[in-house]
Length: 273
Image (cartoon, rainbow, N blue to C red):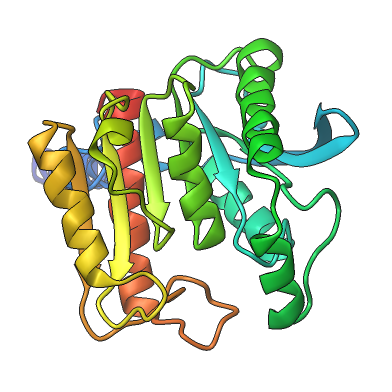
């Protein structure tokens, strides 16, 4: 009788140990990162990092918005360039979001402190830009990240007005590792584009009345002729500035997909994953 009770107790203990082991295994499995077409190789790559942000003077009397992970590491850098509205809260929020993915982001200010509150003023500011000074402004941002933040690989990223400026930076003797253009003005001069020797990503809307799709296709064709690696995406049924959640043309599904493509592109060319 005693031996039977001991056997029952031992069996119960073994069952408890077995259940605990299964739960332990499940807890370990739950920590494994989900497969994202091989883009993430470790759990750390998938977790959004805590971010700190502050204003920094990167050009003479010009202050940009610097966002970076709080944990020190060798992160790549991104020069972020605002839309025709200026360096507003939306761009700052996007800078923090990108920084949480493991980047040091410097959002530049090409309007020198002014933020447009209506389309007329935004048009005035963007159309009257001193392009030479804007180039010096953005190059100073690159230098700041290289010397003050010790970043290695670097990209530029901009939307609308900033998308065009992202391309301008690439065309003006600044060595980058990637360029991202969201529905920005394009250059189709083959001799000028031939100076770019790194990958380009372009995001556009098929219904854009500002950036003609014929120009986008010509731009891609020239990149192909020059054997410049590129990813050009044209989203059907959306117009200009479709990725801006504060605008009237915002298309959330396409914007989310485009942002995911941009993260994969930057991850590939700046982090090598």
